Structures are given as structure tokens and as C-alpha cells.
Length: 126
Image 1 (cartoon, helix red, strand yellow):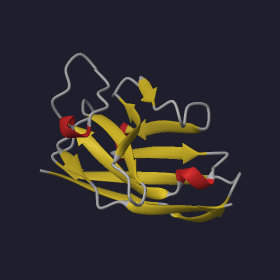
Image 2 (cartoon, rainbow, N blue to C red; image 1 turned 30 degrees about the vertical axis):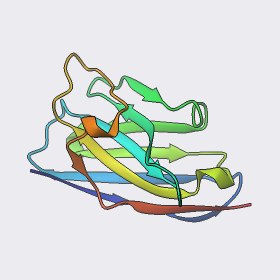
Image 3 (cartoon, one colour; image 1 turned 90 degrees about the horizontal axis):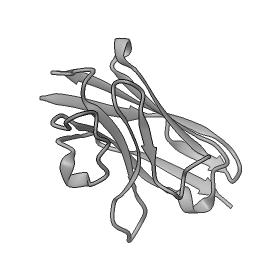
Image 4 (cartoon, rainbow, N blue to C red; image 1 turned 45 degrees about the vertical axis):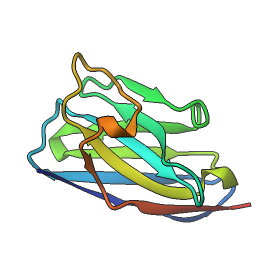
């Protein structure tokens, strides 16, 4: 079992920044792909970003150039730095672990991820 706990969400004005953190515990492994997803009110949960243990990353087009995913394997923590925030970034953000990805693949489907955090709310005021 892997436990994931997100933090860092909050209310921010448009154009501002936030950094989300996801602390992993339990049967952690640096080889797991870690991802961030988000779900806005009335919408499906969507992929935001993912990172493998070598630092390779992938982003949704909607956040490319504004968000940066990173990880500190020694601390079992994944981060999502969010800059130039927009009202449409308002959502609950979830951290997730993909424990079975092969060859460092960065998968974007939520069904590929085995473990999920409880989510943290990000609200961007316009």
C-alpha cells in the first residue's frame, strides 16, 4: 500500500502562483511514475502532469509552460509548481502513483494509476 497526502492548495488571484506537494509513505519506490490530476466542478477528472524517476515529464497542453512537476526521491515527495494561474485552473488537485508503468512510460489515463491522495483544493479568483 502507498499513502499519498497532498498539501499546498488554497485561494490565489489570477496570475499568481502556488506549489503543491505530495508526500508518499508506505511501500514507496523511486521507480513509480507520479502524476497530478485535477477535477473541476461538473467536469471529469483530467491529467495534468506526470514524472518518472529519471525526471522525465509530460504535461497536459493546457498547463504546458506554466506548471512544472518535480520530485525529490530522497523525501518521497512530488511537487507541482503552478505559475500564471488562471480561473480555469480552479479544481481539486490529486496526486497519484502508477506502480506498474514499464520503461519509464508516462501514462496519462487515470485508470493506470493505482494509488490516489485525498485531493487539495485550488481556487483561482479572476
